[in-house]
View 1 (cartoon, rainbow, N blue to C red):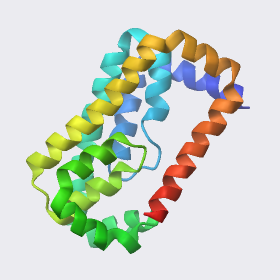
View 2: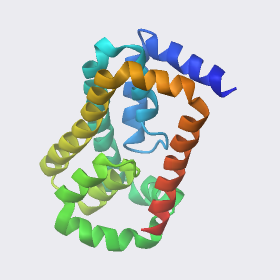
View 3: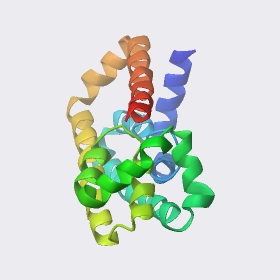
Length: 192
């Protein structure tokens, strides 16, 4: 079953509309969606190495735009929608403490969190609740998300064929480690 899913994903990633799907996932992940865009960026770059930088640009731009949507949720709709998203990730308990730290270190927090697999939507919503300056928010988001997605795309572009070979030979291990990393990210959120 995993092999069929992998083959389906690689075929989807090679299609001409794959970048549109990447843009949608990347936008949604920055504001409310739980699946990170890396899950689509990686197969797209492996399937279409010549388009690695274009995929990184689409992923970065969509993520930053989605970040502004998350900011708007925090700023305008926190009580209606934002609180439910924060609670869904189990972060409500420490949210007030995080807001205090966030007001003091916002730019740095955005840059660090934007590089990690920790749900970025928590940062974008917090930015809106805190009323962070939009320029600072936008620049920090662009730098952190761009660094993450471009580094990922460049590494996959450069080491693509050996990585793809390893993934195809060790698919069960790769899926297990990936799922473990996602679960660890969610557990880390709950512990913070």
